[in-house]
Length: 311
Image (cartoon, rainbow, N blue to C red; front, side, top):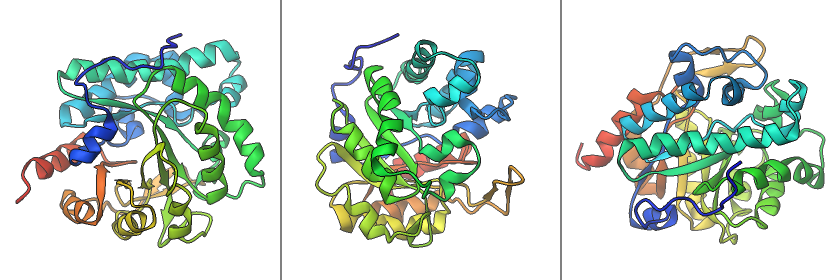
């Protein structure tokens, strides 16, 4: 397993340096790209299953986004947990190797692009491990301390693999955000904190200003914002995040379609538009991209907007 915490030198700029200088483009939804490549994601581990079974498919998905212009590649570790792997008979040592491998897959794809890139190791919420849609509700009945015990081992494993940043993403409530922020304070890697929201509140119902405010005084947090939400909700949240923290904002909403957890499918129509990026930037966004159902074409459109300010 790769254990060096220092990522390879590519440009001399950290992601924090880049955010201080301008807007950085994230990738899009990994799962939809893998499905477009013909992968079966019906397993409870979702895309994390492929870390052991078909890692080349994950690397190919990362390459598709890098070729579309993405500068930050988010790893396939969102649903990778020691508990989830154990249910499939995978021991802790092998599970740790697979999590570290998620960072390596993204790094290889980024290096192949020949351009400046950064790797974000995804740390998904507790509900993702349950694979029952509860990451869209939060309030699991666990204490902050219990959530810390769950998140610490894999956060440590991912940090040890040498990503540029940990993406604490799709967080549904402030209890889990507090747990994650406590866990990562012992790790030598920057993070971003990104909530999944509905309207002007977290999925669990807390006001966004309160939720974002948890990260306001945490130097380790490079950016705070939202992901895996409706684009219209993301529009409003960017300004709130910037005002609540004074930090750069990260924003990568879904396509606008809605996930039906019972039917395990997407419904509705897509409303994600690259033209939204201008308002995001003006409100304080510095990390922009897409989440579920936003593919390489959507990221390519965002890249074109960023390259042509007047477009």
